[in-house]
Length: 423
Ligand code: AMP
Ligand code: GLY
Image 1 (cartoon, protein in one colour):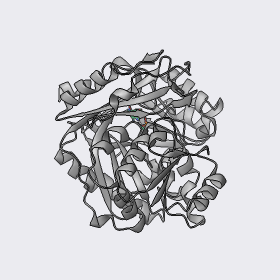
Image 2: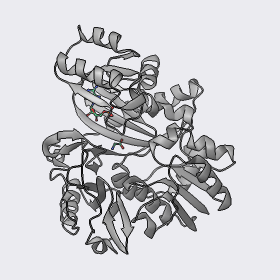
Image 3: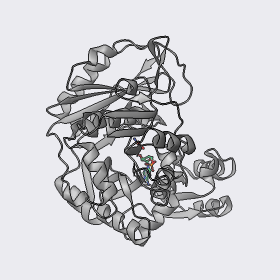
Image 4: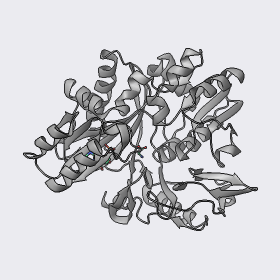
């Protein structure tokens, strides 16, 4: 069969790699893809939001399955656009992707269906939000309602910071229209875990757990980024926690979406905080995480096409997910200065060292081919993933492999997976 993957980052490279492993697949296209993906798929120069061109291409090439990976096209209805042309497509429709597209929607859903999450209020004007702050407890969390490249969350320690935050979200529109509404939320503490899961509208199958590192600098300092590294599994995510989440969070979320007439098919990513009061939902995403996919998918034994089709066909109850009994760590190699300002266009050396090594992967995020050379082309450039029999060995392997790569401007955190030592 022919598969089209929509997207261009490290997550998409990990998805394309899994698709390429399926012996049901003859040909893979990726729109727009990147220099690493180009080794496994034919990259097509169509943007992820150009639904007309994407659907025309899929019809012309007789694509059997489209996989829409990023949040923006999902929330804007890419799956609806493919389906309208009769093209089979993996991912939630727009009416379900709202689970990620609107934080106010997802908070109200959790409240209505008793799904544990931080206490909150929604606001659609700055005056009410500012008034609410006068009696609120600090620290407090401000969230722009809509998509904001993972950057629309402000944690404020003082009321002055919180007032300034409300103004920048709702009045100065720091995150554009994403800030037309906002959520003000109780600050909760604990360990964070990401659990990605396949969903077919009724049945949910969680994948193995992972933990991200969102801040740019060591010691969880600096600005929030798309994610600087991940490890999987999380040693803090026990069987008991998994059972609690299945009963109180995962299945109730799927059932709630169905009850609201918003049947969810695709991947739900649960961003969880393991608090003293039990696990709570920090956020939902309607897709694979980046760089969570880069540690979760290499550990999955199933044929990803079988699982994706079962999600579309409503037969996920017939599938058991199977993960390797090992561990994986991904260290993101970024351009110095990310996420604010950075230079691009530097040649990347050492990529060949990863060839023919089963336990090591170099996923491309921001790269492109220029004059026959692969050069840096983004803030997050590569994700270096290594597996190992346990988390510590996987971490050692990943940091060893980081040394194989060289480019001007190369920056990575040196403490990805430090939490493993506290387990
Ligand atoms: P989100 O995009 O909602 O996952 O938020 C980004 C990050 O902000 C999370 O990974 C947490 O580290 C932090 N965060 C979000 N909500 C809260 C909260 N209610 N309490 C404490 N930290 C939070
Ligand atoms: N790594 C977090 C995300 O994909 O949203």
